[in-house]
Length: 234
Image (cartoon, rainbow, N blue to C red; front, side, top):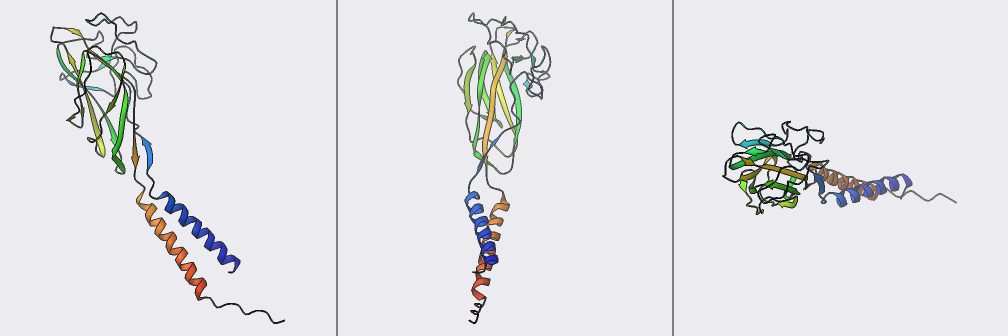
């Protein structure tokens, strides 16, 4: 086998082997649009009273989620325990700076996006939350996941169920229930929220594998059709 052909054949075969090995394997990706409560777009803590740019108060209507003044852990629940203190990466938000709100449900909505090649069954979102009074429900694209949380939780780990996600824009609604006893403290804290998923291989990868196979086949056919060089006369 001539050295030039041998080199081309080895390179084509190596290329094809690499593509075939990599083509079926999906890769992990991170959801970039998820944020803790009480931070700005750069993930720095909001100042007290500033509106949260990532969590919108859908209920009550015409409300705005703002960073609550609880820096000293001064807000006390009816059970006599203070709210979990703010950290360097998240802080409490509520319907008012003082945290006071009427009884009923508060709907805090955040959104994120998934690409067209996301494997939706692999989406996993987790973090920790604290709430006053309770998480009444978490809606994923409007679908109830019916979580169970006790009253006045400290920061507690959570993982949202899969099966409700979609490509494009997704919505997460944290429904916070507040006791119907007139104006009383209410708020939400999300800490360490993160999301991961897997993506399917790019469509071009399969085309590359076919092209590599064609190159190998063509080179092999060319070698078979070449006449053998005559041995030199001695």
